[in-house]
Image (cartoon, rainbow, N blue to C red; front, side, top):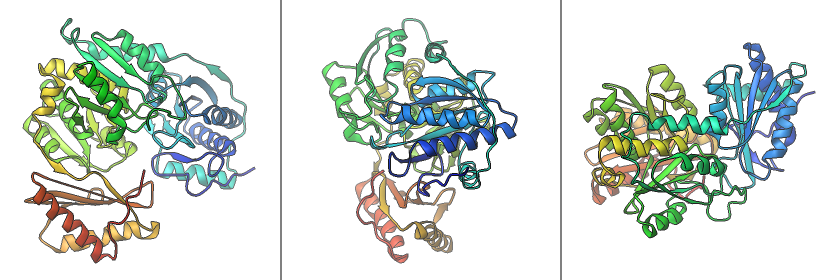
Length: 467
């Protein structure tokens, strides 16, 4: 027995493909066999399995469990829910050694995939390639594991409610918040959570529907926040929170309808945390605003710029003992009083408590941020064989000049106008560019520098590539 995966599905941070084309039950079974074999070799014996609201998820869950048990692993089925609920099941149970969530995250409805955690650490990069290698060789253990079902949703909600501890009782009672689950897997958990929270809560699209009939569940794309923006305006709410398809990324808008981007949310969380934990290390990815790094420093924190990718950020947090990290894409990781994984529902509760402790509304906190002019994330197709080489060429030219650059992940150049970034995506054949300035003129000059560097490598910022 062996199994060959489609080469496009084994990606840097997870496994993802198109159902019936590049991903199906045979792949799920092989993932189960490989993961079980690798975990058993490290002394593990039990895996939690969860899935999101996609139409194809139950089919993949069935095959995945067949694979895990066929290689001797016991399985705890936690059923449908957001990815962070699976992370919770793995982190909170003494008898669980790993976890796999079946999810297509924010991809279109015909996609699905797997996010994995292995003995409390992210399973990515070389681990995922090793699954592929073992599949091709049929290098799997044989056995027969047991399957049990465990209902974790109530314990998961209970654990999130602990974020309210230490906030003056009554302070949150007058709060009015809008929530948009986008028909993703977080809906049922969100209903249970908001029923337990102080204040008044208005919910949109909590019914799980893998066809996403209302809008696409990606809160980093502004048009997907229109329904939430309208709700906040119509009901005069304090702020609104939106989730991606599997509930591990947060989007938010303030009471005036302004988007609070991932790095801006991190500014709020960091200020709250640093008031209680002096000198803490706070990590953000290379796409984050300079305003964030300045804000962390102003409040006595140690700001670290790191590579984009939720698995890479989690690993860096463990290495540095950081209690808080975040990405531009809306992944926020709390390890101060929580488990260090990305949980958008928990991040929503922490937004309520941060504003309460800081004594300012979310709208006031957003309004106090320096106005920056920036490009959206510009993504353009570059041949897979060229993408890393092009970044290396650009890095070489920049190093030979007197420009100030950071090469943690791609090339981020700081000038008097602001900064620009060019990096290769780890998951697609695209280059990603971003620039930020205090003025439109400054931004135009930065974008011209990006274009000049691309041109020098025989590339151009052509048609925008999607996610």
